[in-house]
Image (cartoon, rainbow, N blue to C red; front, side, top):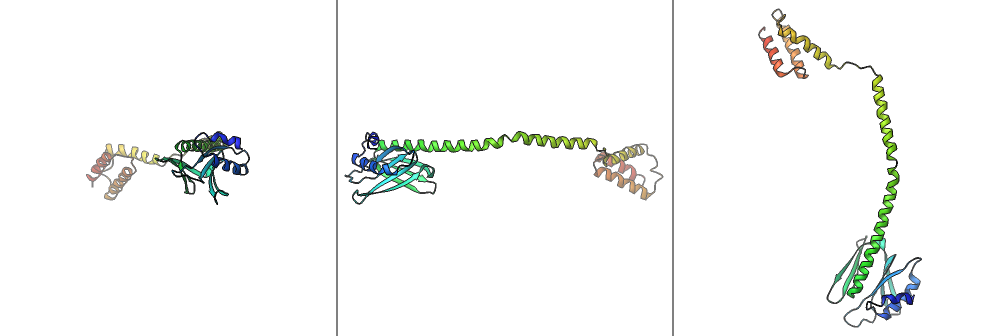
Length: 237
């Protein structure tokens, strides 16, 4: 583990802090978990026990020495808990922070700028990998139901064909509108020829006027035609 951690000593990390963390990490890492980067806090004054942040392919681990370095607190957050990461560069170092899906914000300040940029980049890569994996899983789940769509379309077409065939074998009945058209056809010649109007009673003329009104209301004659019929009937009343 010590040899593996040596690669993180090229960005001005505190060697003693790295050595203490490496000794603890050997017992903390899970199966197939690998350390991606370690950043060590560096305050303007001499920092005997700096905080550190360890990024692995599975989580972020905050390391906080306690009791004069005799013990250390570890707080970890898996990548699927993290909503986003941020870096704020100041005059004296940078502040690296991240938010969790439970609206918790965690930050560690006085990280050297180069180290802060490295952990920010590594964190973005891990979040992108997690996001890409989630999108792929959704795509696979949606792909299987999509293959059922052609069968559903065939069923709908079959139902349409059955309804069409059923309609073809049913006897075709004349719609009620046909009677009105026939009555209109019979009424028009009668009016145009002025047959029998003079010989009708007032009640019969009024009834005929009502019949023309019904034809107008049902859209079977035009307003102009109705007005002509009405005028003709009223001239005999």
